[in-house]
Image (spheres, rainbow, N blue to C red):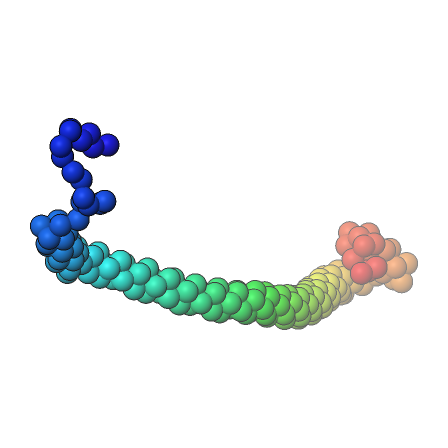
Length: 180
């Protein structure tokens, strides 16, 4: 509020004069120039920085999306390979079981053949041993018979004495010799 003293007149309502208008225009021009300078030196770098940041974030998001897609495809590939590995492991195990059964059957067959050969060899050896014993018994009988013949000729005995000598010889040889 402006106080007027006696004798002063106040003829302008807002107090507009040329000086005020010139100052106002200069102020407006200064503000506009300041705005342009600030826009050029402050706002444009800030906008550029924000746009660069926006592009960087967009690039990182795109890269993350691509990485996620790659990871998902790798995961699917690894899962399929894992299933294939399980199938392959099962095939290897079944093949190993089959080969083990074949080896088991082959070993059993070889063992049976070996057992048959051993049994045949044992039979052959027993036959040879039996034949040898029979030959030994024959030799023994021949030696006993020749001994008896020598005694019979030397003594020129009668049949009673010969029968007694035969009985005596048989007892010396034993009954088991004649039974086998």
